[in-house]
Amino acid sequence: MKPVLIAVPVFNEEKYLRQVLRKIRAVSRHSADILVVDDGSTDATSEITRSHAGIFKIQHAQNRGYGASLIDAFNWAARRDYQWVITMDCDEQHEPARIDDFLKAIADDDADIISGSRYMNSAFVQDLPPADRRRINSMLTEVVNRNLGMQLTDSFCGFKAHRVSAVRRLKLTEPGYAFPMQFWVLCAREGLNIRELPVDLIYNDPNRHFGGQLDDPDLRLRHYLDVFFTALNHAAPRSALAAAC
Image 1 (cartoon, rainbow, N blue to C red):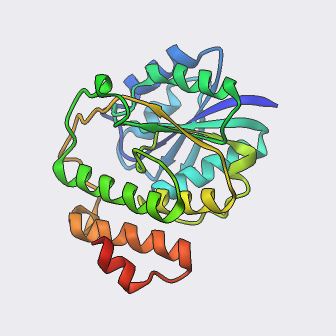
Image 2: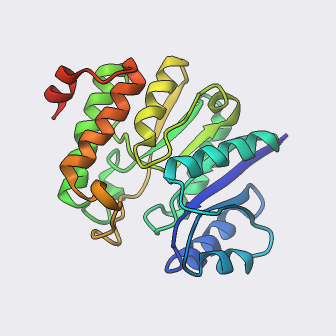
């Protein structure tokens, strides 16, 4: 079996892609393969990816969503017998140097999900997040912990290592940015072992958009809560939503 795949979902990331791929390859050259999931980019992302030899690629004909990109990466890894998938973003908010920390944690073999946390170690704080994002993350982390009996400090960090055999047990379907809300519910239902790992808190572009209604913080929070409680109960209880908001 192949040990580790680093999966990078991208959508119109020409500004950052060359530098991020260069840094990932420098860190992982002898320890992991790299997969780029191009989610229907309309800029130069595809051309940049093609210019990097030795990098695998999934190409979506149109934008399908962040969660859909991760699900495709997990399925791609499973079909090719990888044992672990490390996911990271391509906007320079995940520091490739931390890949070594994930590889060491993988070697400990004591968890199914190793989830990055931007709030575990104040020494790793490089930037302050936009107030609405920090508020929403804090509220959602509390909701996840209270309802699932977890002790997470960061429920929305995309820098993670996933044991492929464990993730294959999850019936993941959420295609958008609310993917983590379904993910944690299914992890809890399957009894997966979860640990957190401190990663850098970096916000290079505080004005970065989610798109559509999700750019409204209140609507974004309600959507995330709806996905969470739907996954938890198959129908989000109105009273729970009201209490959480």
